[in-house]
Length: 139
Image (cartoon, rainbow, N blue to C red):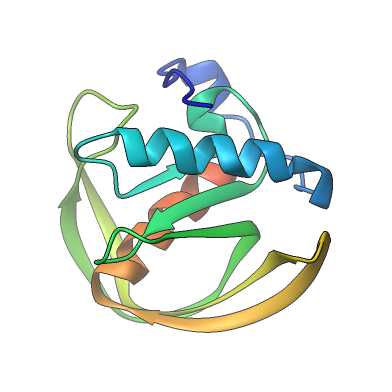
């Protein structure tokens, strides 16, 4: 189901609760919503009003990837950049790492499986943005 985007700072600034396998319907709603947005590249659950640590990001082929409870382990090569957000009106100056290692859960056969993965470039930037959303950090 396509959800309406939330721009309420009170919701967006809350630290998200851990997501569980029972949040699979919410994950599908995030996929449906980001796919419906012309400029959508990633979306966190709090951007649709649900304070769960659940995010979706799109790869260059517009395939959706879901991460439950993503956490940044470390990053290298920090740089300053200007970043937009679907739920913020103005672009923000942010510091992002060009290469990151992330831990997260993935839903496999109805159960969450722990994963660890490296990301670089644009994907690294999107995932850092989503992790900020999960932590209630407004860009």
